Image 1 (spheres, rainbow, N blue to C red):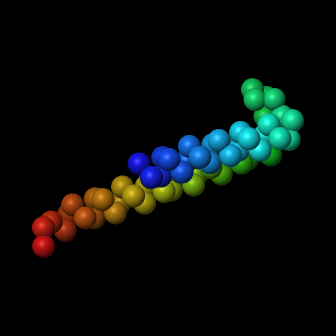
Image 2 (image 1 turned 45 degrees about the horizontal axis):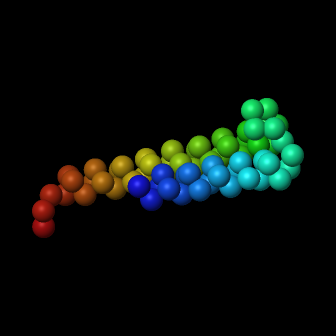
Length: 63
């Protein structure tokens, strides 16, 4: 849940940055698209990391 909350906050930050730069919402420039791609990649890596930790914890079983 924390990863998704941070991803949402990141999306809002990118959209705010886009607005301050005067870019239209539905026609972002290459720099904005690159920032969104980086945010998407970071979110995917974080979700993957959380999932792998959860699976490792389940495989270890109770102590």
